[in-house]
Length: 151
Image 1 (tube, helix red, strand yellow):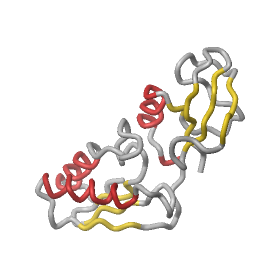
Image 2 (image 1 turned 180 degrees about the vertical axis):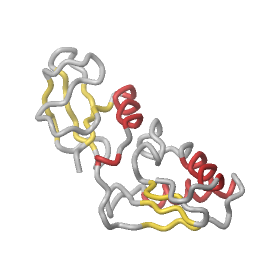
Image 3 (image 1 turned 90 degrees about the vertical axis):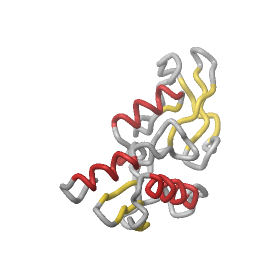
Image 4 (image 1 turned 90 degrees about the horizontal axis):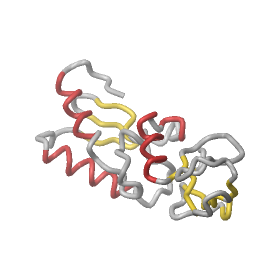
């Protein structure tokens, strides 16, 4: 993620690691894999999908955080290719999703319940609280939960 080996790039990366995703605030834009590259004069980001309604809010939050940390001159570039994939969610991000009650994305047919860890779960609706998630239910504890969709 950090293209420059200097201290400036590391400081910018630390600032970005504190910028929360507006739809899942337990994750930073770094955890989610939205930040593609950090250079001394430019931050490259890729939205989770081209029509994501949070894209402008994310860019504004990054701009505000960079400016507040004294990096007013750092440009933010949005690139769409290659497209974002759930593979870019960090291991920490996946753990944070689960702790927050959202099943992280997997290719498995069923999602383990983030509350009781049962695999006796079912999809209720392909459409969850945001376009990135589906609504699931645990048959063991009877709790509903979101599952992050694989992209």
